[in-house]
Image (cartoon, rainbow, N blue to C red):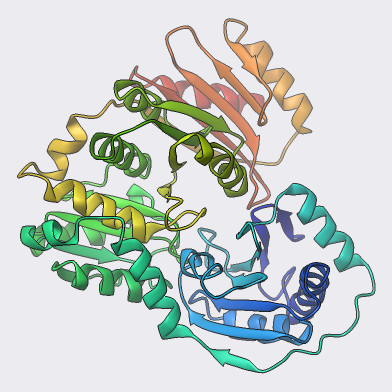
Length: 442
């Protein structure tokens, strides 16, 4: 299986498509890319907890140019991104495969001064540099910055919420970081906010899907917690578990945060989301008179849209995979700021998380993975022909919108060699039936 390269980064199977030699080539290429902006750059380095991380990071470093290298150690992806501006970084490298299964690893690349992941054109340029004969690296001294990075991130997150109000509520919280890089800072955040914390180490795969959170659901009940929090291995996604020990699904995180932020922060607002995120976000935004901007899937598309629309007023948003993006902290998905906002929401009054979620618009939202089969244009044509009553949109793969508000999306994954298919409707059973029809066409 070949490397999966997109503006979501580089990912591959460790020991097969992803080796130390591959890592060194990408280190050289990224070093060359950053050096075009600054010949003696300051670079941030970090990794998640995958066992292959240390070797891959060492190989990346061998390819880097002479400059100032700041090693943040094992930290969440949002931590490295949050630290770019205060540490005056020209670029950053995160060794992670994010939500991908355990046999995967990869790299996320960030460039300043935008301090976002690479866009499509920058990714193509990086790939061209990988294929060229970049000069061998001459890395400078590696400076350890782990504790400083955690405190910088923590300070920024705490500045966005009413910490005293949260502390007065004395919430009980269960945490399952999946053994990932975000656990240390998440526990520290909860301690600063006066929460009792029960840590669960479940050994699940990275992606915090509702089906994988049984241990966390049990811990919430066993410890009498008001909520449970789950991250993926690099800590940019946040999934919730209610006080009843129920996992409502990753889509609920962003919907709850959007409702809370729009309810408590007056003034004009723009909510940015991608095309596969639940329409419940649109409904909540409409309640509060906020404008919604929809983008293609991919964090950088959201980041760039948020940067553009921030000049109009307050802009925030994210993805339905539990990825909250709050620009006062950074322009990337951040489970820590998502956590702080959820805690602030629960601290406002005595309503439970279940009660809060019950007040929100709800759609039946189902996603599936399909193996790569027929060429994508052919698959899109088959799907579009199978649903002639729907209005098609080709902004990101194929999206079909139906008269009752239901929709179907088909697009290639940015992170795995698969096709992602998502369907949503207010009608129970419709998404499953619709995805079944798509499987027959693939």
